[in-house]
Each structure stands twice: as structure tokens, then as C-alpha cells.
Amino acid sequence: MSHSGAHGVRDDRDRHSQFTLHRRVQWYELDSAGIVHFSTYFRYMEEAEHAFWRAAGLSIAPPDSEIGWPRIAVACEYHGPLHFEDEFEVRIRIAAMTDKTLRYSCVLMRGEKKIATGTMTTVCVRVQPGQPMRAVSLPDDIRSRFCVASAADV
Image (cartoon, rainbow, N blue to C red; front, side, top):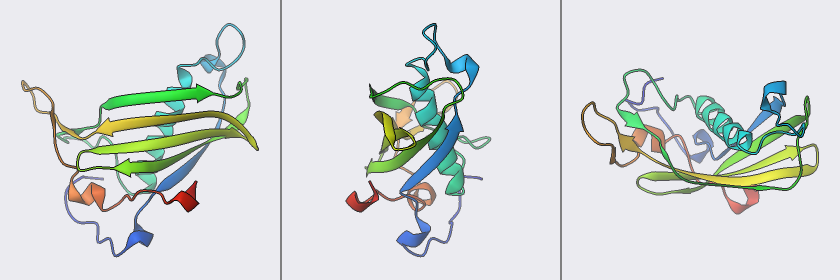
């Protein structure tokens, strides 16, 4: 979906603050110890982010868009391992939204067991050929689709 044009958002019920991605560990994601490699957790969080945008009716990278979303901060704390074929979920929520950034918080769960917690902060930039990236305000049609999760949403 394009990032141009209005989406007809009426109120916060039409806005998205959180999303849950259900997933299964694949063989190629393991390290030599037989557990998910630490760097893969960042991919899980990013995969959840992209699915979150799709659930909101958007694409994070629509064709011909001049908008990009580089990460300016990421963190992950590990609380337990994931193994081959473990089923788990990535719960992502918008923790903060400024004029130019979105900060997500993520929790990875296997059943009732917390596996990892993390955060990602991304900045909205304009990307034009031959020019450096420049931070810009979140477009209204993107801002209108998201809202910060309330404390009750945790």
C-alpha cells in the first residue's frame, strides 16, 4: 500500500499499538550450540515490525517510496534459549512516537516463558538518489495508523 493519501482513520480504534507474530524456529537460525544465534533475535523483532505494518494496512517499504526507516538504536536481553522447532511469539508494541521516530518494545515468549526482551528505535528519513539521508517527520498517513501502547497493553 502506498504511503500517500488519507486512510480515513476515525479514532484510536482504527489505530494500531501492538501486534503478535507467531513463529517456529528454523534449522538455519541455530548456532553451533544448537540454540538460536543471538543475532537472529533482531531479525525476529524486525519480522514482527513488518508484519505489524501489514496488519495496519501499510508496507514499510512500498515501491517507489522516498521514505526509509533505518534503526538508530537496538537492544536485546536474553532470558532463555530457543531450540529447533520451538514455537514462540514475538509481541511488538509502540513504546514511543515522536515527530520523526518510532520506538518499539518487544517480548519473545515460548508459552508462558519469557525468552527475550528488546527495543528498536527507527527514524523516518527521506532517501533520494545522490543525496544523504535526511530525517523527516512521520507522514500523516503513517502516523494516523499507529498510536503508543498504553501501560495496560503490556
